[in-house]
Length: 235
Image (cartoon, rainbow, N blue to C red):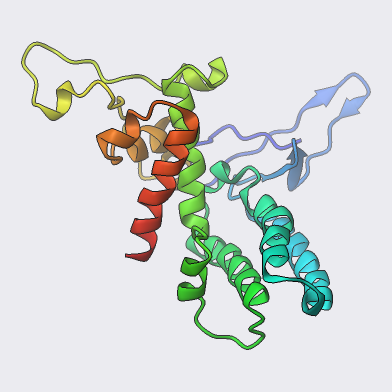
């Protein structure tokens, strides 16, 4: 069992649970709904396993790459690589810079596969031509999509209840009177707390242009959001 008594601290303390048959043995990492959680909530284990799975898929793809069309390569990268990088990626907001770079290398290798470039070379332009959001921006995309669903009553109650619209008083600044803004929870010196959805969700949401926050549907929001993040990533 992985149990922390100080989820906001840099060094969580573990304690041993017990049952009638005897004590429950502790473990360095545990899996829940396909996500691996470690005792420090660093997501190191999950990221390492994701990377290993992606490398296996890429290795297999390179073996048959010369028989595939470019369109088919893109489809396979989406289904075999991006699906793994995106699964549960909202939980990676507080991941270390090194771990994000490791995940980015996977996407970069997938871009080289699509373009049949085996040698190491810059892939930013190639990634832009494919309209792929970088890994860090894909994480923000997922968090903002969840926030949109919370704001518009499309998310599960346990998520929606931690997102609150900003209340306005009689004497407020023009920005504070914007009803599409959310109440921001205070950040802390701990990365794990800043990465909590209740903190990073409203923080990212309030940086969006008003026309994106007020999108009429999920599909419209996704289109506008990707365009906005794409410009931030490449311009």
